[in-house]
Length: 376
Ligand SMILES: Nc1nc2c(c(=O)[nH]1)N[C@H]1C(S)=C(S)[C@@H](COP(=O)(O)O)O[C@H]1N2
Ligand SMILES: [Mo]
Image (cartoon, rainbow, N blue to C red; front, top):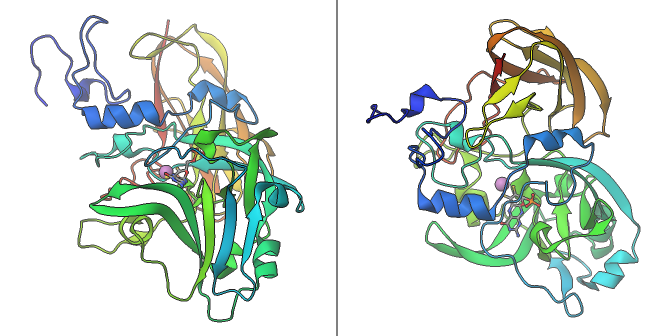
């Protein structure tokens, strides 16, 4: 992009995604109205919300492909069928009378980080805010599947939502499958509450699937049907989307568990509208959270010089097996410009990269966050 007049070119402000000259001047970045419309429907998590152990409802990110279905709980039922011995049909009250369980779970959209990629895939333009860490309550899935009796020849369990739309010229209900052994994991939940409150419409009322450790797309909202199937599911959101493809002909690999990521609470105060950070010199406690869907977080490192040198942060207690882990780092802020970064490594040895590999959907970009701070 070339410099035009007095406007800032995009490469002048690589860390903010918008370049504005003054608050009377509109952004010169090349985001489309389609992306703007998606971004206003599907809001992100304000990074200062990393302070809360559990993300308050409303600060948790949202991702909704089509429309939020309007559901009358009095007539809604969950159907469990397909390759089962005893199909089930359950009302919300019947589901609530079953055993209750809760799990603290960090949810992250597989498209988090997409807007940092060049070229930028056309979809929800997340920077790094497609996250939340909530306590989900519901009934465990495995006993229901056992009650229905999954037949020997079933290979996957398909979860179908009530929402319908068209994507890639294909009309479909939002649905995703999991291998049978994954669906039978004890921590899998059919959730009807978030943080002790009934699910709000946007998070999947009256019932959603929670797949601890996996990226958001598998946590099907507005559940209508659970079906045991004998062939791997080839529906749109499984076979066409949520695969890391280098080009349209590449079958790619399916997106599954969450790659390690750490985010820090941007310190100091922001300016409006660019949200650059300003801070006074002296001791400053940097804090953040880290998570991974592959193994517990084992290490978080912090850099105050854009990733040239790294130092270990102090880790807090993990919030269960599937929730994020807090960390802290004492920084003596010296006058000047600083680029703050943090990176997580999990117990399986996965570490966040400086830059992630590009793919057509803009998935699983867990490159380190960079926060520019002016200390003065
Ligand atoms: N039925 C249905 N379930 C869905 C979606 C959807 O569009 N429809 N979006 C998925 C995606 S891509 C994500 S990241 C998560 C987001 O969950 P949240 O909005 O509760 O944060 O829901 C998943 N479940
Ligand atoms: Mo997502």
